[in-house]
Structures are given as C-alpha cells and as structure tokens.
Length: 106
Image (tube, rainbow, N blue to C red; front, side, top):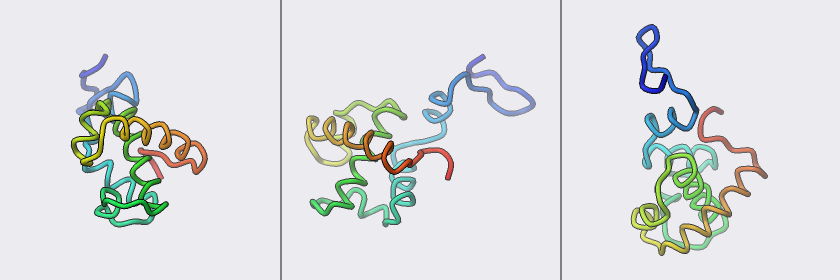
C-alpha cells in the first residue's frame, strides 16, 4: 500500500512514487551532472555547446517524466520557454535510451 511502512521503511507501489518522494529538481541536476561528467552549474548554464544541450535535455526529460513536473515549471527553473522545455524533454528521452543513463542507480 502506498505510503505504508514496512519494518520501519516506507513502501511504494511504483518506482515513480519512490522517485517523486525522494528526488527533487536540484538532486536531478546533480544526477545529470554526475552521469555526464559535468559540473552541476554547467547543466543549467546558458549556451549551445553539444554537451550542455544534451545535459539540459536529459534534465528536462527526467524532471518531466520521472518527477512529474510540468514543462512550464521546468522552463521557469531553467529560464527557457515552455516549448523549448517540451522539445528538450523529447530529446532527453532519446539520449537516455541511446546512452542508457538512469536517474536511479549507477
């Protein structure tokens, strides 16, 4: 049962519930930076260098699909437009599949 406790630990029905509770936007930024061997400030930096664009795309995808944030919320945090956040989220999905990055795990 969601929200229930088992042996002093919370139980979750889905990985999505676990991620939403345990992760926040700043932790996702740190995870993207670690996955791509970057500094967290580089992930959110302005610019169009290929690595920064890929990092932002992965960040948008994980924040949108894994954390459940809206594209508008993500856009506000990254100071980009909502359509740009939506496009980056779609690109991030491809990047995750191609490179096999994971929000949780190694």
